Image (cartoon, rainbow, N blue to C red; front, side, top):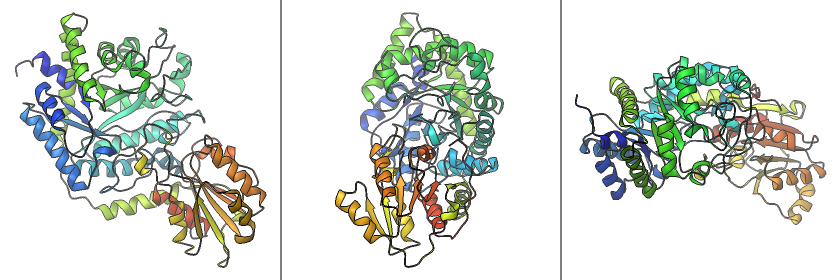
Length: 515
């Protein structure tokens, strides 16, 4: 096989995104001209299952027309739970913390294998999962329930099973966010976090799941846009751009030989410091194989230009890029070796997922106050407005439909949306016997906290369903009647919570984080 041209090599190092459910003409031309080898899709790209298949088939056809002999890597963040890019045509699967709340790592294997099989049926071959961050900071705004919990060994255990499940379903994997995004209170979509722990502490906690995933053969490691002084003492250098971290530490010290990809290089931690285009060059110099530019065509074109300039100036060697090219082709060959086209039994997948949701939802307080038994009880359900907490979430999937779930068990319940007026609050005491309120990250939503405090003053039993953050229990009054964690606003989880409130099932989940 003849050695590829430098332009062919550069094109394989980019992962690009675009808007719309069809490929824009400008993007198609860009892929063909530069033989771009990798695509990332978001919810903005997802139509019906048929439309998704048409999109991925078209992308692969464009790749072939550009002269690429191996398939494009087509990626999504289908972590499940609060971060998922596809809803229609896939099974709703519990996210990481919900899985860990079951206490059964086999569930991680089974659920991620389902995810892999369904993604492959849509033409998607690379899942940017599992998340291996150890969420030991309750104030973490971006990881939280995307993590399997606060115990490094449990995260490693569930992460290993998740990784194996994805690979068994024919999926390329990407563990993230190396060396660990769990102990920070800054969202790297919005700034550059710093994790100042010693190397000894990193080995004891943050690195444990990543080292396990390397042993288990993850295909890809995704970098974190976070500064780790213990690994690179230079100020303001995120792991993504650090040769000491990417090459000396990850490749040499941890003996990792697979692919390394950046997180999105348009995130503020990069774009508002060094800049996306120059940052991509620095990432490649650091030892990264794939640079991800998820949104803007002009920045994608600009990155190609910057890489070419760096090669011409002898700053970035062709040999260094060829190493990445060979690693990329090796992973793509694995896809060819594992071409999977089996019928999908969606009804069976849904039954499996529902069974796991039943094991995950957790009653933290008020077992003696449940169930809400009186058939004549006048019940008010208060829903928060749909909201996202981080740039990793897609707004259209943040539906906090606790009211709909309650109505399946109590059809005459009243359902209202926040905010409530003072007049509404004054009338509550006369109109209702019990209140069920859904919360979405009350730890950072002051209006939700204040509303619960006002409701408790009515002395009506207040039943709280925390639909994203389990830590919300630390921010509500002790006088609430009961508190349930669903770990996510996925409708099957809310159905389980509703069933428990009315005594149809007993909850068995156990929180993977200290509350």
